Length: 246
Length: 249
Ligand SMILES: Nc1ncnc2c1ncn2[C@@H]1O[C@H](COP(=O)(O)OP(=O)(O)OP(=O)(O)O)[C@@H](O)[C@H]1O
Ligand SMILES: [Mg+2]
Image (spheres, rainbow over the protein chains, first blue to last red):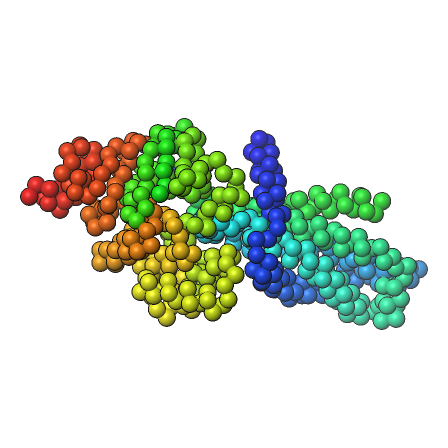
């Protein structure tokens, strides 16, 4: 209990150092480009694959569960759309990204810590927290919303193809995904995504930055980063859903 | 010149440094010697502020480091080069990018000027044309030399070296020692070198502090060290059979 309070304190002290003016803007922008590539573009593939298949499966399962002939077929499209946009894309994809991006950030920063590279940055007179962590946070908060939009679109395509397999016509499906559509749902999903992006990068960076010891501890930090950022995402998902939708 | 006064440092109840006072002089290689675990690295990291101290003062010439805010410390650190025990090169950057990094962060030099400086530093450590290798492609001795090149790229007034030649063969070790001494004299740098290698002590020991039990047990230069009758110092320095015989003869 005391230990976790201490960690939370350390986290906030670190974050206060992270949000400071970059010492050299040209270097800072270069870092951002690098991180956009590492955290963002590198995740597009996995997001596309997962979203496509989950979209398909959601349609198939919904259609099996609604096999009552009284229910119109377009409801299947509608159900797919809502579960993708409201929950699957923002939350599930972010949980998967917590695994991919989070472990990557924690092990990268952790390795730099145990090999004294962070000390080397610090003794040159560079603010190591801001230098290493701020570009990651900004890149993720900027790029994750695009990933989620990609996920939604590909998921709907997957749903359309899955629907075909169980006899949902294209017309019904399209009618369904447009039926009673609230643009606010997108705002809601992207707001969640930005919060989750911040959680994933900052929490993972925290565990990496405070790694002590050697290579084994880097592994421990990276596991902790994934576990804790996932739990915190789930808690915030609960809070944000309550705040934004009800 | 770096002046430390009455430095105390404890790690969870373990008093590592107990009232250390010493003056590290410019243009000289100042050596800190002592057994493994005696607190050499700790002292070096305290000098540059990587560890907080419990009490005491550190002065860089007239500037009192221990009273500075973090921002001022960062400013001062730009005048300090440090060589870590493990090299601590950035492993995703090439040799050239490593040495260029402080120049990019803190100067407004053009690419050309920076490259000139990088090549000059590489030349200084006898590593021409290794610009585009990654640290993982270097041998231990080359790694140390690149680290030295990075440490001197900003023309430091102070140079801190943590066991610059540990893990190297005797010939390369002496090469690195001499390199550090040459740079020190050439640019009148205040250099502090941690070592437990007696060859280094005999080679470059212009001013030596022997840490024992958390205090500076003995200080002097290499000739005084050879003739000293301080028991703990002799036990440490003449631990090996070879040096014992040398002492007798
Ligand atoms: N971060 C730390 N936390 C707790 N104890 C530490 C820490 N760093 C060093 N110590 C302790 O301080 C003592 C001195 O360590 P230090 O690394 O300064 O020794 P050293 O003289 O550099 O040894 P070596 O020659 O092996 O490098 C050791 O007993 C060590 O256990
Ligand atoms: Mg040491």
